[in-house]
Amino acid sequence: MLDRAITSTGRVIVRYPHPTVIFEPHRRVDSLSVKESLKGKKILLIGFTGFIGKVWLAKLLAELPDIGKVYLLIRKQRSTTAKKGLRK
Image 1 (cartoon, rainbow, N blue to C red):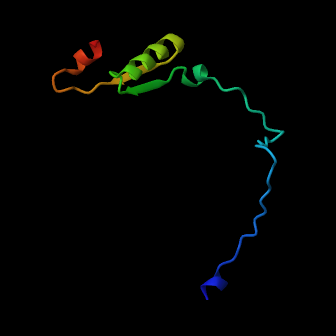
Image 2 (image 1 turned 180 degrees about the vertical axis):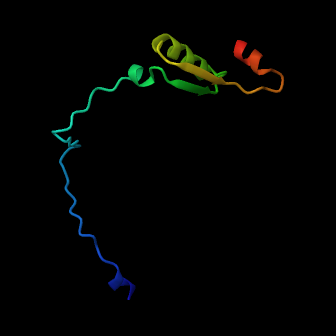
Image 3 (image 1 turned 90 degrees about the vertical axis):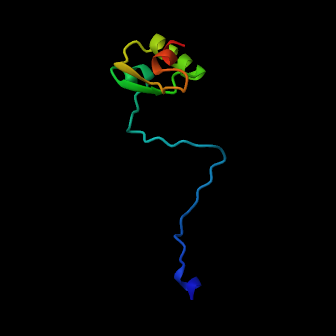
């Protein structure tokens, strides 16, 4: 009884010999730019006190000078205040 209730959608699967991307010919996509996307934006950086966070922040400030604001979320450690964590 359950077998009769199941019906296939009958979808045709087209297999291409290699990976294919089909673009709509009438629709043009402008090039994407990280600088333009982040221009004037506010960014929250979490985990700043770690090595990668510091490197990412330095790269961000050096290469994207038009960013609006960068907020840093710094947790207080047991023996270190957030201010001391920022200075490290």
